[in-house]
Length: 107
Image (tube, rainbow, N blue to C red):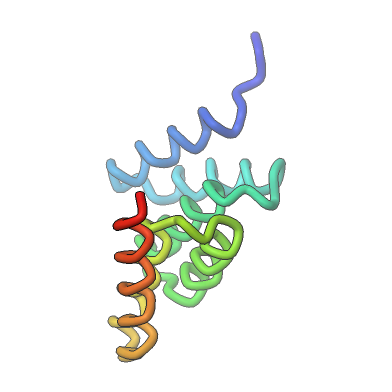
């Protein structure tokens, strides 16, 4: 049988996130990041899992990395804004929300 690749694992991770199976989502995302450390999608999904687990500092790092690899990633910017907002960092939150809006309008 062919090996399951990162695309399939990231799809599985997204499904796990939707089902609140957070440990499974993180495991799939980490598998992809181990194989492809510069995967913006892997970093994004890992960041979303960290955020859902309540690990906001780790989520922030992963989402910033995803946004640095793919600056047009609206989802990463929106979630960063939410983390900043919950952390009381309103100026940073507004900057990320603006960046997300600008990128969404361009699409």
